[in-house]
Length: 427
Image (tube, rainbow, N blue to C red; front, side):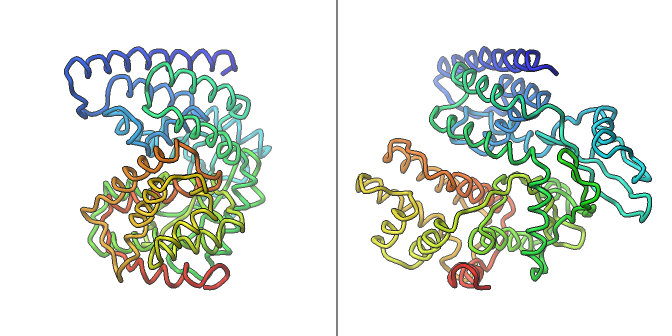
C-alpha cells in the first residue's frame, strides 16, 4: 500500500470513528447515563480499520486496550481483541518476503500457509526444517512499515482529538511518543534475535522458563526463525484449558518471578504486556517468545528503584518520598497532596509482598492502583514520569491485570526477599 493510500485509509477509518463516537456520546448525554453496554459500533469500526492497516496504527490500539480508565464505555472490550488476534496477510505475500530475504525456501520441508499468529508488525507461520525435521516458528515482518510510522502517529493523534475517543489528551500524547520508540525497536529483528540470546543465558539456571532459541543462519532483518515451543498463549490457555488451582498458582509464580528478575537482575524488561507474548507450555513452563519490545533499564534507575521498593514495603513515609525523588516520581516542587498520593500508590503496588503469600482472586488491586494513579497525576498536573518508568509502569500494570484474571496464590514475599532485597548482582 502506498503512503498516500495508507494515509487515506487511516483518515477514512478515524473520520468514520469520530462520527460514530460523537453520535454515541450524544446518546449517552441525552440518556444521562454512562453505562457499559459492550463494544460500541464506533469502537468496532476502529478495530477493523487498525487491524487492516497493521503497523504503528494497530500498536496504538493494542496499547490503548490496557487503558480502560481513559476510554469511553465499551471501548476496552473492543480494542482488547487486537491484543490476542489480528487478521493475517495472505501467505502468497509473506512467501515473497521469505524468498527475497533467504534467497530460497530450500531449508524447509514444509511451511504451513495458514498463520499461527498475526500481530501489528509481523505474523508467525509454523514450518519444518528439511535437514533435521526440527519444527520452527517463522516470524515474518510486514513490508514498508518503517516509512509509515511518523505519518500514522500524526494522523492518529489528530483524529483521536477530533473523535473524543479518549478522556485525557495528555496521556494519548505520551502513549503515541512511546509507540514510535518501541515500534522502531520491534521492527529490527536483529535486536530481537540478540535479546533472545541474552534472555536464554540470563535464565539458564531458572527451571520454570524456556526461551525460543533462534536459528541464526536463517535469521534476517525482516525474518526471525526460532525453535517451535509447544504451548498456548496465556489468553488462549486461560479460555480453553482445564485449569486447576495448581496450574494457576504455577503460572502466577512464574509471572511474578520473571518481572522481578527482569527489573532487578537483568536490568531490561519486555515492555509489551500483551499476553500473546508469553506461552504456557505443554510441560507447564512459561515460554518466552517475543523480545522485540525489550528495553534496557539504566543502572542509574535500578538502585534507587530497589530502595524505593524496599521502603514501600517496610520503610517510613519519609523514606518512600526521599527515594521517589531519586527515581524521579516526586520533585521538590510537588505539593504535600502529591506526596501523600504517591505514598498511598506505592502501598497498593507493594500489597502482594506484605505477607508470606498473596491471593489475587477477587482482588481489586489494579483498580485501586489506577484510581490512585489518576489522583497522583492530577496533583502533579499530568507531569509524565521519566522516560524509562513509562515502560516499567505499563509492564507492571499489565502483569497485575492478568494476575487478577488468573487469581493465583503466590509466595510473593519470598521472591521479593530473594531477588529484590539483596540488590543487583545477587541471586
